[in-house]
Every structure is written in structure tokens, then in C-alpha cells.
Length: 284
Image (tube, rainbow, N blue to C red):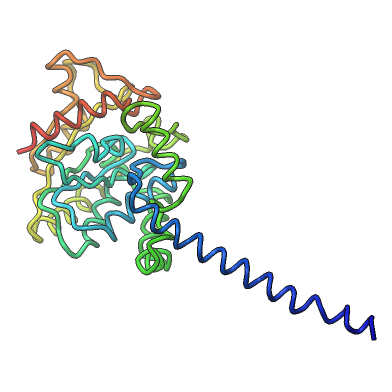
């Protein structure tokens, strides 16, 4: 009799423990959902993948933005906080780590409400998209985006680790700064894609037909900058698009401003803030 009673006890006990764990989990989720609304929204993340999720989810699921910068991890350094108090205070950022600007154009087209302006970074624009670009588009088209829309607490900018990372970075530097790079968008990259002009031009025409204005942006890229006074093959190539170009590398040379980089390629926070101010002054 004793043996039978002791063998039947673990089942209800296990059930109670499961319910307790589920109840505690629900309480923690609700508590964090309330607390996170009062915390600063992170502009940076602890990994490149989470940083891309952060920008893509905000673009796809957040309030419609009047302006957006589309590009690579170079443009990703121009954080929205740097534009506060300027003409581009509503700028969204689709500068995606390890991506081609072409991917950002695809994301602009997926947003029902078109922005007034699309600032298209020219770095890597003439090169072919990679497997990483396909993965980023899969992220948007996959079930995860639907889950993020239905359950906001699953989004990247609600992750406790990401919120803490963003808060610590602000405390350390007085302004947001970027995490160490993991090899994305570094080096000369692949050669020119012979299909780039037709592919990119078609997307730009579609975007402008929806009422947006597309402006090309040349950002300083450290070791990949042309020598001062020498021809810039990239600028010559993108001129075939027939769009206005804001050349911020030329602005730095003209003003005699020394640009700082975290790794010889990506803008350091102080220079990213300066370049952001230039962009807000110079766009047509």
C-alpha cells in the first residue's frame, strides 16, 4: 500500500511544478513588457545578426518613417540618434551588416507606406548580392516576422541582453557606439556585377513611382577611399543612375576633416555623428 502511494505522488507533483514554472514565466514576461516601455530603445546589438533584426523589424513593424538610409554596415553606423534636432530627425536605418544596398531597396518596396526620401549608400552597390542578402530577405518573408508582429516581446529590441547592451554602450561613451565587427563588409569584396545597373535601376524606378525621392550617398570608407584628387570609379559607375549624389567623402576632404574608423573601414562614433550632420545639411 505504501509503495503504491509513493509511486503515484510524482505525477501530480510534476504537474504542479510545471504550472508554477509556466506561471512564473508569464509573470516575468508581463513585468518585462511593462518595464521595457520605460527604457531607452537600443540602436545597437551585441551581434551583427541581432543588429540586422533590430533594424529590419523596426522598419517593417514600426511607425512609418519619412526618411530611410539604405546600405551596408558602413551606413549602419549613422545611428538615428545622431540625426536628432536636424532635418532628418525621422530617419530610419537599413544599413545592414554584411549586406548589399540592393537588399535594403527590396525592403523599402515591402513597406506599404513609402518614405519621402531614400538615401542609397553607393558602397557595394555595383557588386552582386550574397547568400547573406538572401537570408535577410528570408527573415522578412519567414514566419518569424509574423510572430514578431503578433508578439512584440519576441522582437530584437525587447531582448534583455540587447537592451542592456545598448544601455551600457550609452553609459560608456556618452553616445551610442558600434560593436566590434565580425568581418562583414571588409576588404575589397567581389567584383562588379554586370547586371547591377539594370537590377538596381528597376527597383529605383519602382520606388520613385510610389512617390519617394532616391538620393545617392557616398560615405567615407577608410582604406577603400580613393586617393585625394584621383578619379573615383565607384562615383563614375553610379552616375549612370542619373540621381543626385551627396558625396560626404569629398566633403571631408574639402573641409580638411580627419575621419576616424574603428577598423580602418567603419566610421568611429564621433566621425559617424559628424557625417550624419553633413548628410542632414547637404541632401537636396
